[in-house]
Image (cartoon, each protein chain N blue to C red):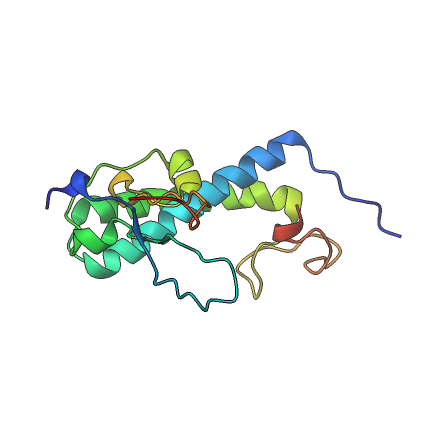
Length: 77
Length: 89
């Protein structure tokens, strides 16, 4: 799989039972950061500027994995 | 009663620069653990380390010793345990 074809967030639909006491969470998601697809980190990957690396949380853009907060309860296909 | 310490603007710029250099050093350390022969990364690591050695005395002028047991000089009086601590600035 080519590096930029993977998604960082994936979704699934948990089973919802008719006897569930609480309102169902129909869609849940989980994070799949780049390192899952990278394996052994290649040499000489392009780097962020040091200042930007501190705020991005990684020295290499290829490994950047943003956190966007809203995780579940989204009506995804 | 020790008055409340107020740092000038330059201190915060220096401190952020130190945090930036430290983060690069952490990343490179972890990277080099698995890529010990990456010469370019080792060069970058040594440059960052050199830059840090220049930076730390400047930060310590404002903040006092950052490390103990001789790894930092002491001001007068012996004040390593006075506020603010790095996480309080």
